[in-house]
Length: 143
Image (cartoon, rainbow, N blue to C red; front, top):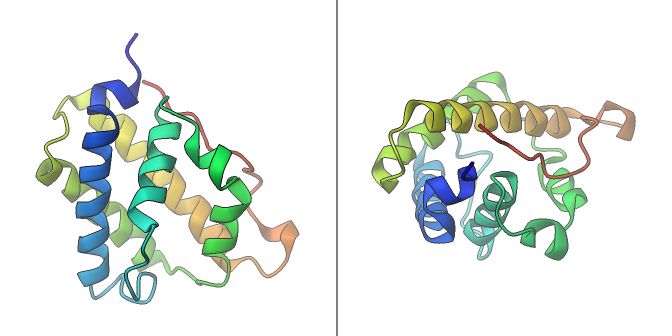
């Protein structure tokens, strides 16, 4: 079976999606505190993470490691409203990026983003290492 990475259109499609999502997040009043300014490599890192999650190249793990994403979220204190809006903005970017409208693909993507937003929120609120989400590797998402 083809991977979600291949089905999505590979690096080019995922990069297009991540750029659209990131631009929307930076402009969104609910997400402004979580995304206060454009960071030079954020789109590239988002692309690497999503690609690896969906069965593509393992660049995120090889170049950054999962602890990187934990540390990026620590202390952000993501609210429920911000977490929910993050998911909404991500899913809205799918159409604009021209990713497949296939129902199974969209459901897998929704589950991936929803799960990730919960992990990020928990890590953002953690005051001790014991309060961090137990996930310590890029999750591998399939159909």
